[in-house]
Amino acid sequence: MTETFDPFELQDTILGDVRDPHSVLAEARRRGNVQPGIPQMVTVAAHRPIDADALMFTAYGHDAVTAILRDGETFSSTVYETVIGMVMGHSILEMDEPEHRLHRMLLSPSFSNRTLARWEEELVRVVVDELIDSFADAGRAELVRQFTFAFPVQVIARILGLPREEYPLFQRWSIELLSVFVNWDRGIAASNTLRDYFKGVLDDRRREPRDDLITELSVAEVEGHRLTDEEIFAFLRLLLPAGVETTYRSSGNLLFGLLTHTDQLDALRAEPSLIGQAIEEGLRWEPPIISIVRKAARDTELEGVTIPAGSVVNVCVGAANRDESRYPDPDRFDISRDPKQHMTFGFGPHMCIGMHLARMETRVAITRLLERLPNLRLDPAHEPPYVQGAAMRSPAALHVLFG
Ligand code: HEM
Image (cartoon, rainbow, N blue to C red; front, top):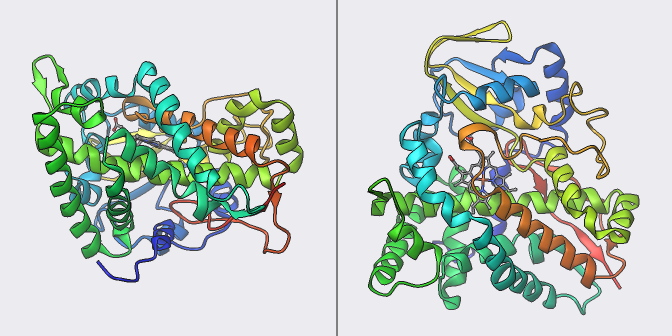
């Protein structure tokens, strides 16, 4: 680990300073909902191709994306084994059925509504309020560094029941793990360190069970199956990119949408119950992850395009979310839009296991910001913010004034 570690190296995981991928994706989608190849910005930005020799296809249309994600037999998730698997271990993300179903059943109870209600009360509000306390009197803040970047990792640390004094270390390893595509060796080293760290915590919980997620995973049992230690470590490591980076970026994107569309911010302030649909619209309009991936397990055909077995399919949820056949005027950020399911949490068997947690965290975060920082607005002394990234997307900074 270097002395001068800047957590904002994480920003590199966006793979390139692309500001408007949406018009490129829309143009591609109009040419065909499924096409050979991947958008050039992704080719240019990808540091590590998943499989350099495989044929590549991209699904842009909403129906095509839904069809692929629904059919895990034809479109396999084992594609993640090559890159993400090397960093996380054998996690649920890269499993096909029936192994996947069993793991889903083992893990889902930990994210039940009852657990979420408790986490909201005991953990999420505490983290959010503590962070807001640290800048509430200043009249100004940079919300990415001071708020959105910080809260999801602290929430996960609390959910795991880690001791407070270990948060800074945990945050640092998490960031190093997340920036693995920028610095492979450091990312792999962090993955090993986190494994050893989690091993210590797991051993502790086996000796002395507690009321936390690691204890729950250690005793979870379905149909006579238990998670092995390596499976627990893989899941815990997966929670960092899956549960931390996504939530940090999506809450920044929603704040960006609201702060740059002040009429909608005012509407939300006047009617706080609009928060649920504001969150969904933020997720649809500017998802933190543009694409997920599958591999064709057999020869198949989709919307008239032949996809040979072994092909890698770039499933572009960002393009599907702006498919004009489903969302009228799709580029408009509009929190009063008729709610329709978006693809940001995926779809089908692998649909995000943490989506209710992500929604709850975002609701608490944005609601408390608006309650506690009156007249929250962009600071005109700074350049107008923008969302950037070809793979992961979020604003690099959100300078605001309040009070
Ligand atoms: C806005 C925030 C989030 C977004 C946009 C998001 C997005 C996604 C997507 C698209 C998938 C499906 C991947 C695929 O099918 O290849 C997924 C799966 C997953 N997510 Fe999330 N996620 C978010 C938050 C979270 C949180 C908070 C957690 C947990 C703490 C989490 C844990 C997971 C896990 C474990 C999976 C794998 C599920 C499976 O393979 O069955 N995610 N997420």
